[in-house]
Length: 431
Image 1 (cartoon, rainbow, N blue to C red):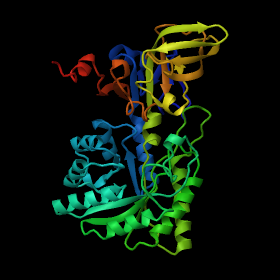
Image 2: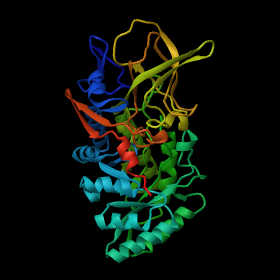
Image 3: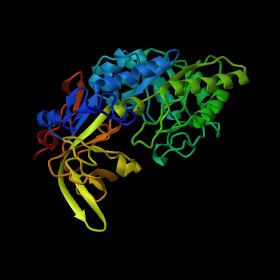
Image 4: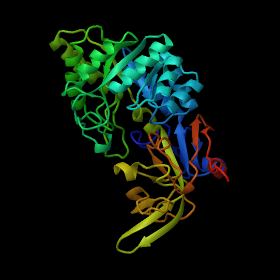
């Protein structure tokens, strides 16, 4: 048995004597035989262990699992059982939480363009916090809450003018972007006035999110400094939500902070800023999503064809691709992979792992080392795909989306079933 690198692979990932990848005590060869490929293999113990680590690291605060990373009924049950709140950002995500009967007071509702119907459903369910994102939404939510005869607790999403060191598409703290109220322009202060002047709304905190896949805390320090400056001017506001964004290891070159270290640094930053302002330390909230779901999952593919272009590259085509992982195309994301169905003593060679879609940009991993004797029928596993793989999956080329198979202690079970062609055809309206 060989234990794999824990920073990239799920905590339970090993290989058996024949070189087959084992996750959660379950052979991926067995998973492929029983459930087919491609498939998302989710290590339940890894996911829940990471969730509990966030709960423990922020025991004096409020960690919310960011459901946009990956959400289904079973995950909602885990999040509830392990003591986290849940962050949803659409009516669809809220519907999953409601179906799983997640405690409404532990829900946080995000979104830059929540509809009247979404807000009405949130208020009716008793969602604990709504993060307001525009002046129109403040008016809309106030009307909904007043009509329901309740006082809705809200946070104001503030744009602190901080550019995180990450891909431009997942930077969310700088001035030029669609989220929140600008601090520099004075819009955030006006939003505070708008909320506090409404009898149907109760301002309990401020919120900021500076981006995703972040490996340092300097950006959080600057955001906290600016956010606490605003918080100091508002009476009765006791919560500061600094969002999520902590990065994970996609390859061995990535070096993310441990959650305990991150929590220690974040608390110290906030405490120091509060001391300099002479204000009480607010209750701190964070929103990990990728940091919990990402490392827990491996995508399992079967090799279909191998095309060698002498002097250029070798293309290894698998039975999935951009419909189950758009991040390589969208963000130029980097992954690693390994032969998962057997042992090989062949020297590795760099190949381009690509998908089956009718798109030249359908690349899973560029220049990844895999054994030179790789052949059709082999299984290849790509780790760290739990965040945004299934969540952003599509039916491009009418390809059904893969299942999510949860594994633990030698047992496997489907928690999201594979789509079928019948599912896709059922949406067509026939003449």
